[in-house]
Amino acid sequence: MKRRTFLKTTSLAAAALTAPSLVRAGASKKLRIGTITPGSHFWTQTMDRVGTAMADKSGGAFEAQIFPSGQLGNEATMIQQLQAGGLDMGFLTVADSPTELTTWRRSLRPIW
Image (cartoon, rainbow, N blue to C red; front, side, top):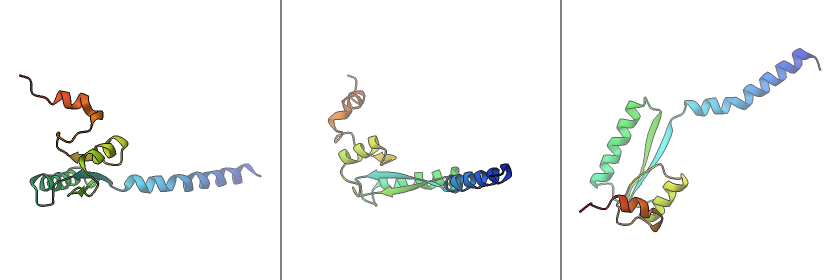
C-alpha cells in the first residue's frame, strides 16, 4: 500500500471514529433529579425553577429532567442511585437516609 493511500485511509477511519463523540459533545447533558414529593409541592416547583435557570445560565449545555412523586423509588433507592451514578441530584429528607450514610447523618445532628 502506498504511503498516501495509507494516510488517507487512516485519517478517514480516525474521523469516522471520533465523529460520534464530537456530535455528542455538542448535545446538552440531561441531569436526572428525583424526589418523593408530588408535582404541586414546593420542592418540585423549586426543582423546575432550578432546571430552567441551569439551562439558561449554561446556554443550554445542561437540562434538568425532574422525576417527582417517587417515580424512581423511595428515598433509600434514590440515595443508592445517587451513589451509583444513575441519579445526578435529589431533593431528599434526612429522616429516611440509609445506614450507609451514618457519617453524613451524624454531621446533620444539632449541636447542643
